Length: 210
Image (cartoon, rainbow, N blue to C red):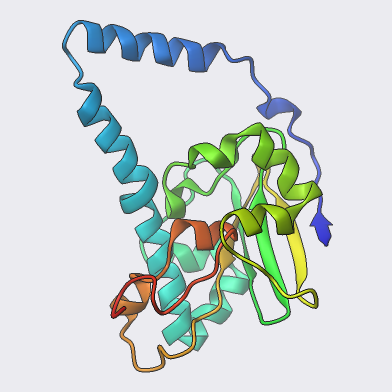
């Protein structure tokens, strides 16, 4: 395993839980007064966490699979290449794209908070923000991926990338075999949020023409 560390550290990102508590209190108050429907709120969060947000990243990945020149630009200057598709950085963070190959598999974590590439992946999943994932992704990345159903061969190098407020990572998954004739739209339907974090791979049976 190869772990990538970056400076500066996260100290400025470690905040007390008060904002989260205030948010929860506000949510409870709005629900109590009937201003917000909790089911509608849950549906909205789910949409941005699992559907709307990750679809942006999926389109970026699919474009690299059908356009070699775009793939080269994405790996060289990610921010500009992603902006070509209309998705731009929102907080001044620098995007880095790391590419999976037959011999290298990348996994993204934020060890001290939950830094995450919102423009291309939407809201971070609950498990990404959890303490067990943030610690075990570094200590036992293969074990973590195994729990997601991904078993890597021993000769595959695992690289763990630690996100910060300044640097966010996007995993570029391998294009699955058997999709050589698929359209860009069909390919995008295969790409999941989890594959762009690195806890799973993309397969030709995960969507599209499956």
